[in-house]
Image 1 (cartoon, helix red, strand yellow):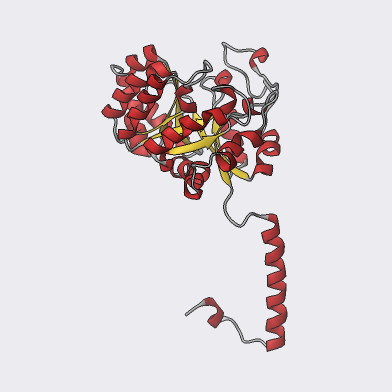
Image 2 (cartoon, one colour):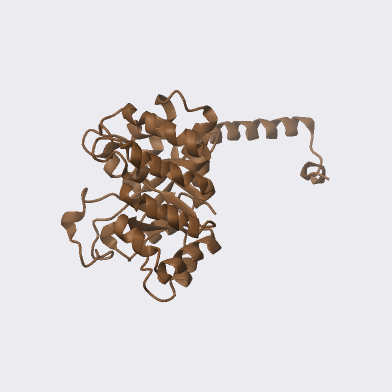
Length: 313
């Protein structure tokens, strides 16, 4: 029996009046909200100029905060006009292991944000720490990877605990890696095949201005690990470093052809993407509007569904 059959009877006139009001209300509501869920920005940093409530780490001072402020409200002014309504927050380095500002931002906007935290894997109980943070909206953990650090992780029992814990919880290991770390990352993915791994910012390939094919080949070798994903992001920092960033199209196509769009996700890397001549609109437009080889389904995955599947767990 449906709900309507349980309602008391009403006159036809009353029914039509009620229906008209409902339709009008629905029209107003739909005018305020998109017909489909908005896009997801899979990589944004936020911070506050209030360093009393949220102190910086011991290795940082306010000179590191450029711009001086990038709060959620400042972020929304950039992303919402472009149809982005969910965001993955990445813990900012100058807070080091103190994730509180990010956690408070998630608590304030729980339907909007998920978080990627930074934890000290050398401390006892890191697995429990990861589980506790999951209850606060943290669905990933950031690691900084160059060749030296990534190779050291291969023999680190503490790092093994972290990767295994992430596999158990479904949280992701998110790697800000240099291209020289990719061979070691491949070994880690082989050792921990059940762990979701996200490689940030093309593994920084093209940061020198030139996309080295050997580096791209190494990144594409990660395709054989189904739990590994790549962010096509931070366009301001790679290749010619100029909008509309079309020179990055061949690298995006190679990754789409190799991984499939289901394992790629777009991200802006705000606030850095909105400095100087760069803009938020130019970043999302590359994937949404500029690359003819991307199908509508590709864009749906890269702009929404991949990030949702990894971070909204």
